[in-house]
Every structure is written in structure tokens, then in C-alpha cells.
Image 1: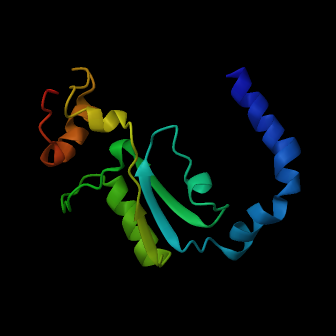
Image 2: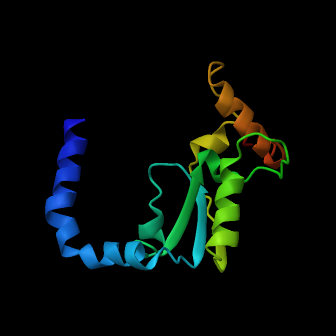
Image 3: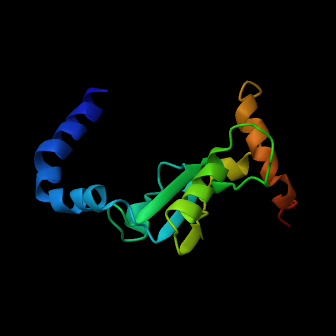
Length: 139
């Protein structure tokens, strides 16, 4: 935790003062991203670096496996649907990028079952079941 606090301190003292205008613009003018970036929560994926963007350029929605659930009209909480609705209806984004990536731990889930106690993860990954391909032994 101390390392994270030190990094935040460096951001506040070193990085932010040099880029204050870049960060203030979307605050003062309101966010106006042209693109919704729908991606995986994977720690190796850095949307701003990948898309060569800065603050205010992307509206980012991330989850395990970059899955977009089917439309559900129940009264439950639907974070991904809410993010898409907000981006499209309120921010009027012009582009939607759905970003998958290689070596996804989430996409291994349908092949190698997650731990039994990970009930939310197991339920979430059932959405990928229709995309599962048979794994054949090498000959």
C-alpha cells in the first residue's frame, strides 16, 4: 500500500502540475469523448496507451473478459448496459470499440472452471459458453 501511496504522491507533485491543462479541459468543458472503449479488466490492458489517447478522449467500460451481456429488462443492476446507455445517449459517442486480447484469464474460464467459491465469476463467464471451441489433442 505504501508503494501505491508513493505513486499517487508522485502523480500529484510531478506529473499532474505539468499536465494540469490536459486534465482540467474535460472538467471545465464537460467530458466529450468520441469513443466508448469496452474492454477487459485485465491489468495488462491500458486503454489510453493502446488507443494513444488522453483524459477525456475515451469513455471506458471494463469488466472480466470484456463481455457484453445480452439485453435484460429485469429490474436488476446492469452496469455494462448503463455504461453503454450513458455513452450513447448522454455523451453521444460516435464510435464503440470492443477490445479483446490474447492470453485472457477470463476466456480460460470456460475451459478451466474457476474456483467453486467464485460464484459471481462462474455465472458471469457462462456468457462466453457459446463461443467455446473444442480443444483437440495435437497429433
